[in-house]
Image (cartoon, rainbow, N blue to C red):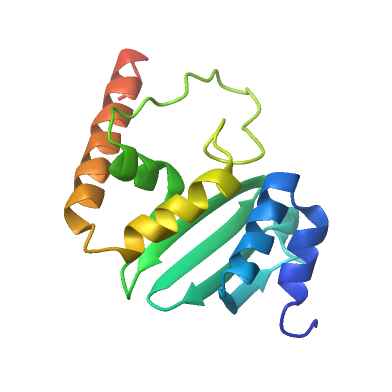
Length: 155
């Protein structure tokens, strides 16, 4: 059994450059590792690491080789990065049109550079109550996904 930070170390060894840059940015900005699980002994090498810098929390996961991130303010639930980006930037969610069996992007959301968007999201979340914007973005993503699956005849 590894010590504190063993899962993070394993993640750093296996992370794509954007995730690695984001982990470095979090450390530089004073975020502290507060939780971790998984790692080399877990199925698929899955892992979860959580960082905090009051009042914010950042959760980074690797699930079956796909990296994703979520953020939360205070004791709120972590919100996935794609939902936060919609809440922050506005716009209409656009689910990726993938065929069954298509490979998933290594870093989710596809085409988003975490190292570029994390500083802005951290600042935005720390600057006030974003509950309304996040709720609206969650609802927009839910509607977009329902529409996507309905259009594919799989709703």
